[in-house]
Image (cartoon, rainbow, N blue to C red; front, top):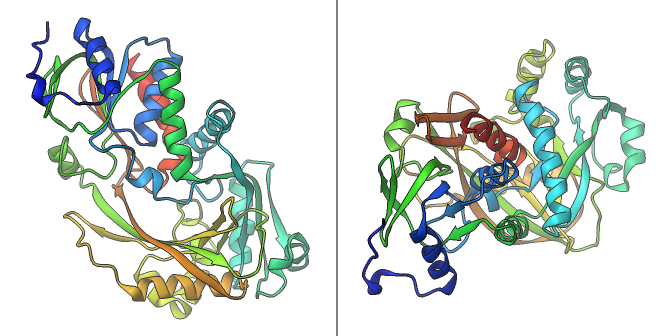
Length: 396
C-alpha cells in the first residue's frame, strides 16, 4: 500500500488528483516515463495488447522536446533497408490510423528529392535497385518540371519521387495523440519528474507509485534517468537549427522536398558505388554546409508556411544555448537554391535536440520488466511508433 504524501505536495490539478486516486488503489501494470513519440507509442502498443492500467508521466506540462521540434515528416526514402525502413512504413500506417482517431490533419503526402548535380542521378538510379518498394521512381528533368511550377526555375537534372511519405504538424499532432490516449483510458501525469526508481516503485518529487512494468523513454534528456547507460553506450546529443518561413506569394508544395545534401546524410545512400564521385563534388561546392551537418528539407503547414532546415552538431555534454546566425543563413541560402520561391519572411526559429548513438535504436533492459527505450538517430517521428511496438512485444 502506498503511503499518501502530505497534501501540500500534491498537484492542484483535478486530472493529477484523479490519477493519484486510481493508482493508490492498485499498482499500474505499466508506467511509461516520457510523453514523446516513443513514450506514447509504447502506451498505445500496450493498450492494443490489452494492458488495462497504463500511466504516462512527463516532467513538463506537455511534450516540449524533439517530438514537436521536427519536420513532422514521416520519411521512408533513404532510410537503411530492412529494419529501419520496415519500421518507418509501419509507423506511417500507425500515424495514418491516428490521423482519423485523433483528428490530425495530413498536410501533404509524397517526397521529391531533387538532383542539383548530375553526379546525383547515378546514385539515385543505384538506390532504386536496393529499395524494394514499387512506390518510388526516378524522374527526368522534364518529368520533375511537369510535377510543379515550383520546379521549373531551379537547376535540376532530375530526381526521385516516393508516394509513401506523410507530413503532419508535430506541434498539433503530439498533443492530439495524448488527448486520444487519455480518451481510451490511458492515464497521464504531467509536471512530475521521476527522480528515481526501484524494482517496484517510481519516485517523483511528489509521490511514490507502484508498478509491474516500467519503460523509460527520455528522448534527449540524457543527464537524468539512465545517464550511466547513455554514457556507456556513447549516446550523444545532436542539436539542430530549424526555421519557419512565410512566402510573400501563395505557393503549394506537391510534397516534401529534399536535395543532394540529403544523399550525404541518409544511411540508405551511403554504400552506393556512385556516391564516391558525388562526395567529391559536394565537398567542393558545399564544404560549409557539410561542416555544419546541413541538408535541406522543406515541408508545408496548413497556413501556407514552410518549415525548413536543418543542421547537426554533436556533443557528449550539454549544448550551450547560443545560436549562430551563420548556420541559419547557410540553411536559407541552400534552400533558395533548392526551391527558389521568391521573397519570404522568417517567422520562427528554433533549436531541436535528439539522442544520437552508434546504433539506430537503444532498448536496454535493466531487468525483465524495466527498460530504457530511445530512437538514437534523427528518425523518431518516422520510426518511433513501430520501435515502441517492438519494445512492447519483447515485454509481453
